Image (cartoon, rainbow, N blue to C red; front, side, top):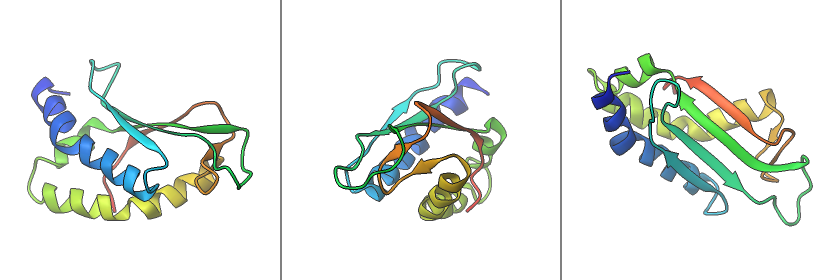
Length: 126
């Protein structure tokens, strides 16, 4: 991906995704932006949390790394990109539910089956 586009995603879009994730978890999970390093290390958001104190779930605490498809990132700076991104942020709670079932994640207990999970090459569909 073009370095300017990667930098723009790091500054304009990734922080808003991280903020939305933190809001979904009502401050009980940390969402950290890891800026783009190079093609092998794209921008990521790492979502971490200690397990819920009163709900038993999977063995490991939340440790999920989100990355997005470079072609999808390009769409955010094109026509209708802002509206598409806003729709994506609104859809994140539903998307989390879909990922939960597919990847042995339990967001209610803030736990997961594996020590670390990558949700990679994501799109911005709502």
